[in-house]
Image (cartoon, rainbow, N blue to C red):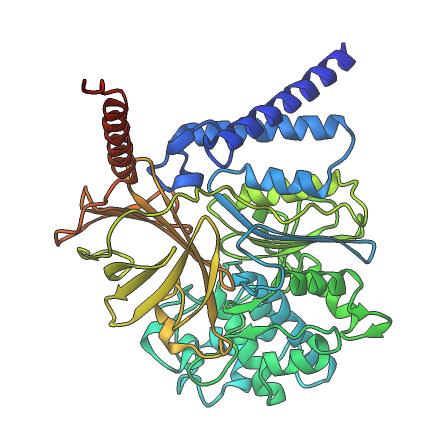
Length: 558
C-alpha cells in the first residue's frame, strides 16, 4: 500500500510537470499555475488568490515527491522557492563540503550582479566586532558611555551607564526601537544615545540601530570603519572585492543595512563561519568568537525570545539560530538568507524578494535537510517567456496623476525596433531606458533605483552605480507592459500602460499584491492595432486579385 501511495504521488508530480510545460509553451502563464493572464507573478494584474492555492498545492506535491524519492537537488530547491506565492527568486548559491555546487540566477539577474543584503549584513558587522575584540581594542563588557562620552547626554541615566557592547550585539539595549532618527539628524549616534530606555539586558527587541551602534563602537575603538577593517582582514584575503556599504552622514558604516555584494560573496562568508573563521588554512578571525556569534546568547542573560515561528530558536551576536539541527543564519528584510548547517557541511545563500519570509526559510531548511546534490548538479540559468510582438503605437507622452512611486510622466519613443521609455520623476530627475522586445537590455542607471528608506539621500558609499534591465511586451488588448529590473540592487517595477483606458498600473516587487492604479491626465495617442494593417493589406490584395481575375477572363471582342 505504501509503495502504491509513493508511486501515485510521483505520477501526480510528473503529470503536473507535463501540464505546466504545455501551458508555458502555449503562453498560458509563465509560472504554469493555471491562472493564465490573471496570474500576478506573470502579468502584474490584480492579485488572484487562486494563484496562492495553486502554488501551495504544487509545493506540497513537490515536497512529498522528492521526499519519497529520497533527496533534494539544486533544481528542486529552485522550483520549491519559485512556487512560493509572491516570491521572486534572484540568486541561489550552494556550497557543500567546500565545493561550489550551484550558482543559480534567474534572468535578467546575473551571477556577478551585486544585491542589497539588507539585515543579512549584520553578520559582517559582528565579524568586525570580533576583530576589534581579538585585537584587544574592544570587549563585550566595554561601556558605551566610555566610547561615546562626547555624544552622551550631559547627565547619562543609570540605564545608559549600564549599557555595554554585549547588549548592542544581542539586541538587548533597552532603548526605544526607532529608525526615524536617520531622517531628522546627521548625528545618528548622538540621537540614539539620547533615546529613552529601560535597564539593558532584560528584554530582547530587534533593533537595526543597535547594529549601527556596534559599527560606530568598532570605529571609535579602532579608528577605522567596519568596511575598511573587514576589507583588509577578511574580504581581501578571501578574494572578495565586490562589497559596497553605505555610510551615515558623518562617515560611519551603517552596520545593520545598506550592504550590497554578489550572492557568491555572501555564501563564502557563510563558509568562513562554518569553518570557524578559517579560510584555506588561514585563521582570519578567532574561532571562539565565531562560536559565540552563532550560539544562542540570550539564555545567559536570562531572556527567552517570545517571537513566533522562525525567530523562536534563539539569537547570537547579530545572527539567528535555525530550526534545522545546529544551523544558524543571517536574514534580510525581503528574502535575503544565508543559512549555515555544520552538520550537513553546507551553506545556502539566497537573494530574493518575497512577502513570505517564513515560508522561504522553511523551504530552504527543509531542502537542505534532504539535500542529495553533488558538484556539477547545477541547473542552467532560469529564463522566462516573453512575447516578442512589437508595439504598434506612435510615440506618446503620458502625464500621470500623483502616485506613491513619484512618477510624473512617461514618454515612449521608437528608435527602429527598439522602444525607449523616459521616466520623469516628481523630484525633477529623468531616466531614459531602452526597452528590448522580448529580450532584456541593460542600461547604466543615472541616480538611485527605487528604495524603501526615506533617508536614502543622506547616505553615501554606493559609488559604482546601478544597472537597470528592461524589456516590453504587448498584451492582446493593446496594452504595453514594461518590466524594469534593477539587477544590482533588488527593486523591480512593472508598468502596465493602457493608453485607451488612460490608465497606468504600477506593480512593485516589494508589494506585488498591491498594484497602484494611476490615471493619465492628458489625452494620449491611442494605439494602432497591427491587426488592422494586416486586414487592410489582405483586402487590398484580394481586390487586386479580383480585378486581375476579371481582366484575364474577359471575353475577346469579335
